[in-house]
Length: 351
Ligand code: SF4
Image (cartoon, rainbow, N blue to C red):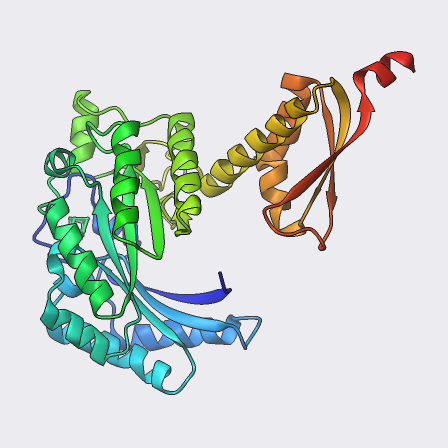
């Protein structure tokens, strides 16, 4: 996928009539009041000034709320600003996110008029029982209808799903991924549920009625989801909530996260877990006990291959008694790797 710069504009859905049990939208978007036109322009200008590579495509993305649920005139005033940058050729894309039941032909026509290119739908689950449990207020039928309409109007379709919702199992989440793939989104975001202060979910958690996923469980499910979407050629553009001033480690005083599988580098943990499995599988396929290996990779994969705080390298040593040396080579294709045996166990015994 082509590299693209994103200019994020957070639009809290103040006065949202819905009451999703996991949501405290002001907290998640990191913003307490409605954004002004001046703030939008200032944000866009700030990002444009600070992008290093000027020729890379840019997109203005309205995040944080149900865009088509906010007042029409606010939507128009925000879109007008973004559209003026698009018409001038300064940015190439405009993205919004919204709920499936807030999509109809009229608002799609309006979004088209203002140059919107991508629409992301907050789906969360395709299981109606789970949607009801977390009081989403829409069902899977709404997701199907909205997805079809969005694609028919020529927008890029995105889906957002959650992992670890009340009463949701790993099986439900894999089923959600399969259901979504059939609706042909181009992009997907995966959010493990965090218990946020001031939400109904917090009360359920405190009563002992909801048990959040452990970090390892969330990583395992997200790993399978990521592999599944990759096989379907669907781009997973985010795994884990964006860190903000308050979406931080629950142990920190300012944190609004009460519990759940929070990690500041959640995606790295998921990607690294996939690399670890691939490397171990390859080592096993040698059918000889190895002591030292060289793993050749593209530099862009290095962080994921090495693991968070060198976890993969340490685990290879601890679990398999293998010393791994990483060689970064720009000639290697991203996502590919080669393993050479530097020392077998028998060589080591001979020494
Ligand atoms: S997650 Fe639910 S409650 Fe929160 S802003 Fe979206 S629709 Fe409203």
